[in-house]
Amino acid sequence: MSKETKTNAMRFLEKNKIQYTMQSYECDEFIDGVTCAEALGQPLDETFKTLVAHGKSGGYYCFLIPVAEELDLKKSAKSVGEKSVELIHVKDINKITGYVRGGCTPVGMKKQFPTVIHESAENLPLFYISGGRIGLQMHLSPAELAKAINAKFEDIIR
Image (cartoon, rainbow, N blue to C red; front, side):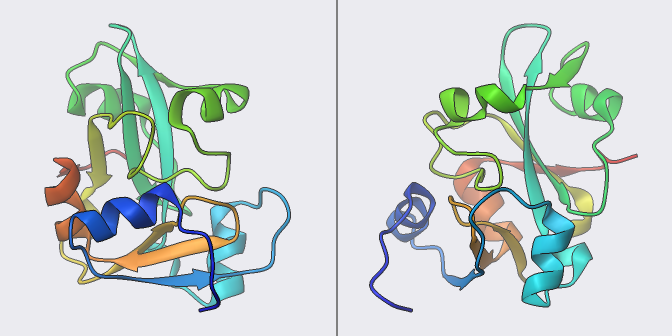
């Protein structure tokens, strides 16, 4: 990889001694996760997107689900002990997380939010998540990631 500026996500992983590899793709603006996975030849069930939601109590939560799936808001709320959650508005992503749409990842955010990873990742040796900027994907262990950010695995998709 060429001399590239490290993202907060990379710094976090290195600080926590989590092994990862990077994959990059040409992209100037947001593309959906399925298109990104297909461009890189990544299996859809091993490529996860990061969604941030706001709970009724005022807290923020991070949910990682396979890119071709849809978040179940009721299951997600239950998984974090909220009555309800709703996804944050696209215009608020940077202000809340420090990342842009298409580059949001559960590590290295302005603040570490409680995180739930879809249970399908629990037995995967490695999976793909955003690398902290558009055009960048990280390949790492879901178990190591979950341990480092105190995430849990649950069924949170429709």
